[in-house]
Image 1 (cartoon, one colour):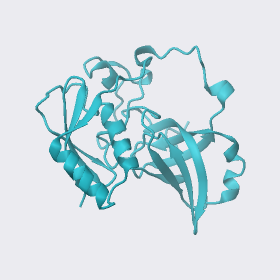
Image 2: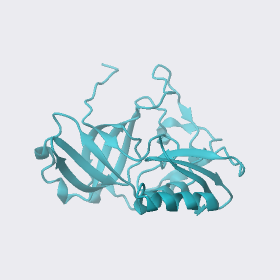
Image 3: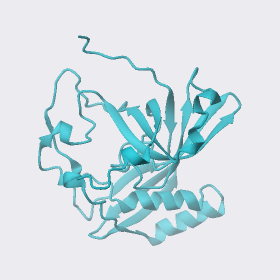
Image 4: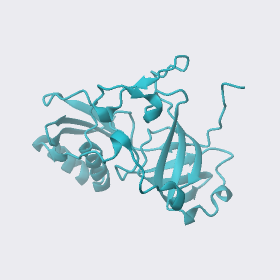
Length: 239
C-alpha cells in the first residue's frame, strides 16, 4: 500500500491574514471576506454551475507555511491553545496543524463566483486561512447531514469569549488620518477589531505590559491585552 498521496492544487486563498499570528482558530468567528483564485485548468465557470444554490462550502486545504512540521516523525500528542497550551491530548482529538497529513478543513459562507478576465474567483466569508493557502478541493455544505444539532464538541463546546477592543489616543489619530486619506476602509477596521477581540496571543502568554505586533491586510498593528480589553496602540500602513 502506498504511504504517500499526491493531490492537485486547484487554487490559492487570497485573504487579509498575512501571517499565522492573528488568524482565528476556527472558521466563521470573524466575518472577513476573502477569495480563492482558481488555477488552470480549474478556472472554468462550468465547474461551478449550480453552486449558487448552496449558502456554504467546505474547503479542503494544505497547511503550507508550517515550518515546524516533521513529516518523518509522528507526534501522537499536542497542546491545544483552547486548553491553555499546558495539557497534552491526542492529535486526532484536535485540529492542530501538527498532524501526519498537513490538511485542513473549513466551512465558509459562499458570496459569489466571479470571472475577471481569465481569472475565476470564489468569494467567501468567514475563512480562517492564511493568504496564499493552497486549496485542494471545494465541496458544497449539506445542511441536513453536515449540521448535527446534538453533536458534542468536547473541550471546544462553546465559542471563545471575546474581549472589548479599544484604541489609544495615538492609534485613534492614526486610524482617522488613514481613513481621511482613503488608504483604509471602515470595513477593514471592523474586520481588524473582530480579529483582535478573539485575543490572538498564544494561550501561555499573559503579560499585560507586553507589546504585540501583527500584520493584517496592509496594516501593521501594535496592541496590548488587559484582562477584558485589547488596546490598539499603533496602526501603520505596511511598507
